[in-house]
Length: 276
Image (cartoon, rainbow, N blue to C red; front, side):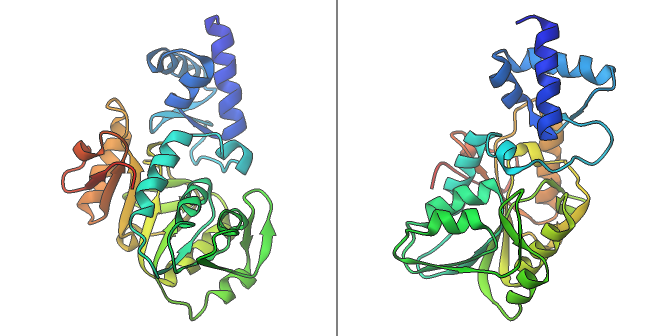
C-alpha cells in the first residue's frame, strides 16, 4: 500500500471513530506502528488530525464519542484482558453495579460464571450477556433507551438507583486523566454514571491505555472517588499514558495492569496479573 493510500485510510478511520490507537491503525493498514506513527505526524502537520495518548484523534480539543459498532472493534485484545482481570475482583454472593460500555460488556460475560451474584445495570448489552446465567440475578434500571450505546439514561434510570447500596461499581468512559478523573462525551450518560457511583462502596474503572490522558466533556467520576483502575500495559513509547498512570497512582488510585507482562507493570505499587 502506498503512503498516500495508507494515510487516507488512517484519516477515514479516525473520522469514523473519533479516536483510534496506533496499534489498531497498524493492524488495519497492515504495517508497523513506527510507520503509522510517521503517517500520523504527517497528517497532523496538515491539520487533519491530532496525535494523542498513543493514537490519533479528531482535531480540535475534546474527543467525540463513537457509536457502539465502532467501539466494539477498537482495542479488542486489551478489553478482553482487562475484563479477565477485573472479573477476579468479584466474589461469590456479591452485589455490584456495571455501567454501559464495550469493556463492561466483556466483563459481564465473565461475571456469568460467578454464583450468587447480583448485577445492577443500565446497559442492555450487559443484561444480555448475563441473561442465561442461572445463578446470577440481573436488576435493570428504568429510563429512556439511548440507542448509540444501548443504555438506559435519564431521570427514570437515576431515580431507580436511589437508596441502592452495593459493594462496587464497574464503569468505563471515553477518557481518563489524573486531573479530572473519568469523563464521557454525553451528558445523560455522565449523569447516570454518577448515580451508579453513588450506589457503590468502591469504584473500579475499566479503561484501556488509549483512554489514558484523553479528556472529554462531562466528568463522571473524580479521581479521588476512583478506588481502582484496571487497564492494559501501555506501549513503551506512549509517554502520555505512562505519565498519566503514574499520576493516578500518586493520587491513591490502585492500578491493576492486565496482560502477559502485567507483573512488571509501569507503575510502582500497582497490582499486576494475567487473566483472572
